[in-house]
Image (tube, rainbow, N blue to C red; front, side, top):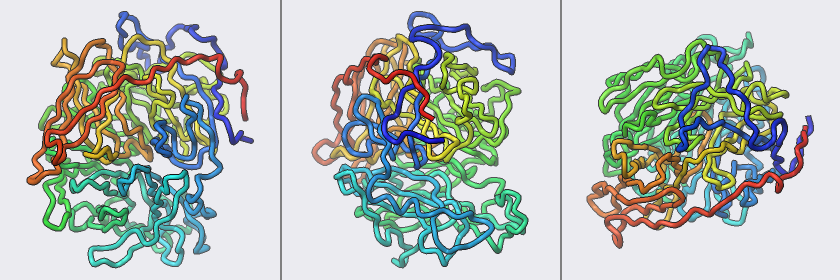
Length: 581
């Protein structure tokens, strides 16, 4: 298969624009019922699809600080057209020659895993952290986690010896890593990093892919997960053991795969979930080390081997519930009522089939104010879209096209398991969230422009540090329409979530209420004693708010409101429909 390496083409095969088809019936006998838009009609989900060369997992950010969003490895022209880059200069060492990790050691090469894009030194240019997925080989200097500094000119530079232990000794981080999570866990204004690793030891490694020569002694795992605290210069100290989050000797049945950071209990401290642990941040000591206690079991969460996790306010109650993505179960919803989680067996359609389904994520794809759930195709190459209808999820199929986000619209079976999950970003700035999907045939990205016809609106909330820093990952935003204060749309600034994925930093919040909304954001103060401050303001559909954290000059924080740049999609501006394979 030969991929074009320049323009990401929008494939407009199948139906003409505006043409509709009867709703399909799901194999589980659940009718395709969805939420209503402001005209009282069910929107028809529609995606225009294309692809590009992509060698990274799906991490969406304003990589070049140009005011546009793109998956790292591509570049946005400002109108949603993504150009594939051969390789962002300076990131070449992420992709050293691969070797199969279980059967032979060449003591060279690097088996990359996840990557996260974040501004670790607050200079306004997002940097890159990359982990590995491989056996620990102390003789291999290449197969380690790497950090790359953004030079601000479209190039990167690998940081030398970026990690150390509490004694100040340099450390190399190796092993089979999973979803990287970034957040400011000690509220010092600099982003920290949590990297989960497989830490189990068993007589025969269950992750050996039927290789009879693969024993624990020949493919050791990392001894721990790492919590890396930023010193403010983009160098990090591992404090995982001191913080209580090292996940040592975690069973292979509970290995940390997905992860997400958030201020779960609203105290201004960032908590996180990984490996069946809901780590609640209990405070920061005098050395700047945060400390955590696992509250998952006490709150009713199960011991569960996930392939992705996501906190969502599925019923607009103001509480963040948890979706666990199982490789053979699909998404499972645990509803939070303010004190405990309770499994909701009827939240998703029963009897659907899942096979090694590695990844899922959530966003509001039809702007009805409710987060929807998307699941990758797995080995069945059957991706699933679950629209949220008043707190119940029902599978829908998008309008038929030659290539779209559906098994029936995927003739080349690209939508299976790729190098990671799927991520969300409004690439063309039209107020509808789009989808970036790690396609099975690598290196490839499947891109789905959201073309859903709806009269619902949206607004954007971007939570920033006191000086405009993008360092508020995990902060929680709540919005209620003026006429329905009981409707509380709760969203979390993305820190890396789902599975091997990163959604856009600004929150795009859809709403069927075309009226002012009251928004609240709780942020820590930079002024001692750093008591959290609740910032409140009003926003209307079509506007963007930038929320600045409290500072000495503005102890109550600050908010600016501006109109979102209007955008009208015109199919005639895009290349004629054609296959590019």
